[in-house]
Each structure stands twice: as structure tokens, then as C-alpha cells.
Length: 425
Image (cartoon, rainbow, N blue to C red):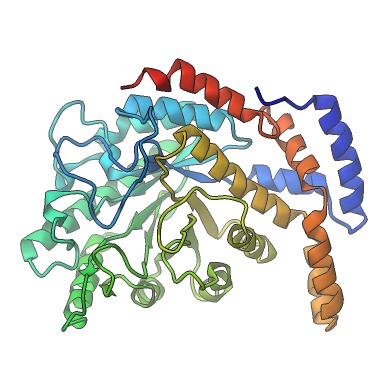
């Protein structure tokens, strides 16, 4: 058993931490209020290794690979919802769920992806209402017989393109229905795996076809209060190492011209690129950005998010730019080698801690020092704040929201594993 922290000790530590931050004109209470209002969209696909609940008999394709065989993965939508409810019970604040099209409730019926409707997600919407959370949505352009050759919206075969365009149209309708039913905007994010394993002779035609397909999907204007569309670029994929049709440059141009959100996935760029630096650049021209926070190790390996330098830098840019209402934060990882509930909680808490770190910085002071050309003091204070008492503030945040502080949440996960997950075979 991991020891639980005493509430009186937590409050005592927080009182002293507040004083340390107040010396730099940082209001810890205000920081916690702001943090409680920033939702994280939890990725459903961590719970079953991106399998989904279709009855089409397809294998995992599209350059996606979930490694590991930890027991207890969700086998049905009901099991996945139960697992997610456990996760939300261990997170402070109100959050969201990021759902893929392959997770519909088909109840044994075989429904192809061009024929899915909002009714196939009625149980997800009802569950979300009970949980008091919002939903985000993604078409699934992978793991399907009509994507076996690696091509979907940019396929040279018109029948294939038409099928996937219809899937996109259906998914926008579903996303809009979710937004209307739950009273909170649903992001609809398009990612496709299309590309070439080796050097292509024609890079032009697939991009022209992709643009045409996207234009058809987005032809109907939907109320942005209910749904907002995003397009997601990628540097390369397994099977598309030499050429990805939906590259960063392509989608950035498309998003600006067509007033769509750009989805920045932290695992979809070169390992040396700073994704945090892109936020201020693209938000100079775009209204909103969708952020998929992942952790790639040498490639887009979608490791569980941790409180690393890149996540901290992302949070700092969001807070320093006062962009919490323009950057929609979602998680994107799938690790089958560890307890899947724990993976969700670790990743979500890491993102929240990064945001709290940024909220507890003396941003106004740092900007004033920079404007005054005092870069020495700027760097000194930035470094000093890395060792400020974040843990005391974080523990207080968790305790006041009725969730375990410290690592004591793992006791709940172990109990759930013993009582629920271990019985799945």
C-alpha cells in the first residue's frame, strides 16, 4: 500500500508554499482556480490498445502499433466506459473524452464506416451526460479492408475516396450531435495514414486528391458552437517513411485557407523540433489549435505522457500566451505494457502538473525583465522556480477536489485491477 497523505499536513504544507509564491506576486489560489477550469480530453484508445468494437474483422493497420500484453484490457464498450469512469474518479477537475469512430456501440450488428450514425454513439452520449463530461471525436481512417493498401482520402481509386469521404461526412454529423446533446463544443479531428514507403515519382496528385476530398467533407458549414474541425499532420509513419500526403506544410496551408483548426501531435514531428514554439507561430494566423500530447521515443511511439521538458514547455506557452481558450488539449498514447488505468492517470496528471507549473510562474515579472533587457534575471528566476514547492500546491489541489494526493491513487487502481480487470480473460 502506498501511504495516503494527511489532509491537515497537506493544508499546512500548502499554506507555506503559498507564502513562497506570494513573494513573487504569484497567487496560488488563483492558479488552482484556473487549473480546475482547464479540461483534458482523455484518449479512449489507451483502454483497449486501439482495437475498437467493430465487427469487420480488420487488424491494426495504418502505421499504428500497440506493444505489450498487460492483462485486463477492455473488450466491450461497457467495460471501456467502466474503466474510464474509474480514471475520472482519480482526476481533479472536469475533463473530456476523445473518442474514435471505431468505438461505437454496434450491439453485434455489422455496420461499415460509411454508414455510422449518431445513434451508434447514443450510449456514449448518455454516459458522458452522467459523468458530466464533454466528448471529442475522430474519424478512423485505419484498420479497415478499404485502407489495407495505406490509402484513403488521397487514394487514386475514386471508389475508395468516395467511401472515406462518406465516412468523414458521417463523423462530422456525429460530432455535431455530440456537441448539441452535451452542450459543449466537440472537436472533430481528421488524420489519415496515406503515403509512400519509398520514394514517390508523383507527390502532386495525392495532395490534389486529398484537398478535393477534404473540401467535400467540409462543404457543409456546421455551427462552431457544436463542432470544430481540425486537420492533423504527420512527419512519417510505418509504411509511409518516404512521403506523407498530409504533411505539416500541407495542413497548415489548408487550415489557414479554410479556417480550420490545426492539430499539433507532439509525436508527429522530428525529435529535435520544439512543438511549443509552433503555438505562437500558428496562432498568429489561426483562431484555435488542437493539441495531442504524446511522448515519442525516437519515433511516434506514443509512450505515456510524463512531466518532461516538452510537456512543460507546451504548458508554459499556453499559459504565457493566455491561450487556454484557444488551445484544446487532448492526450494521445497507448501503452499495453502497463496497467492501462494507471497509464491514463499518469498521463493526465502529468499534463495537469505541467499546467500548474506554468500557472505558478511569475509570468508578468519575467516579461517585464525581458522587455527591460535583463535576461540575466529572467534566466535566474526561471531556473529558481524549477525547485519551488509545486508538490505542496498539487497535493492541495487533489485533496480539495476529493481525489488521492501524491501516488496514493495507485491503491485505487490496484484494487480495481484485483476486482475487475483480473477477471477479464
